[in-house]
Image 1: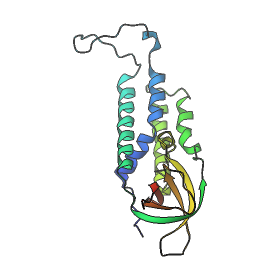
Image 2: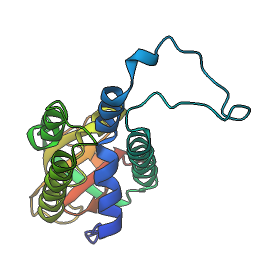
Image 3: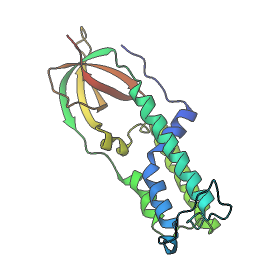
Length: 201
């Protein structure tokens, strides 16, 4: 039986920030100065008078880059997982992702959040901190609905280990449809089972 790998705080923070990459896109779109759409694009190498077409370019672009880097790191880390422990699946049920806690910050982003309104911006950061702590402590951090875009799906399965008839239940992330009666290789990260494909014969 494989040990349950626990996500360290820095890695958890990277996963959480990366999961809100779409939010950074929304904020950057809201902050864009659309009066400059028809303006010519200047060459930042040869010109000293370039104007960034954002109302708060420093904060907007920084948040976007940080979210993008964290998201790419998260995908890269997930791709390096090599499930090795075999399990026999006896039952499998697809679970639609729970989106409420994930989408709340997106709803907040449309409530006239402005980087220059310090109170509202700090309030959004406090709100995100609470969501992070809740998801981190509950062990659900890796259940990022954004992974759906990249082919990952959440299942609830019943399974047994080879040679052990005790049936167990787990939530599972998998890129392949999970079929009862099949054997798969898995790894467990913070109570969430990761399955990538059937066990090779």
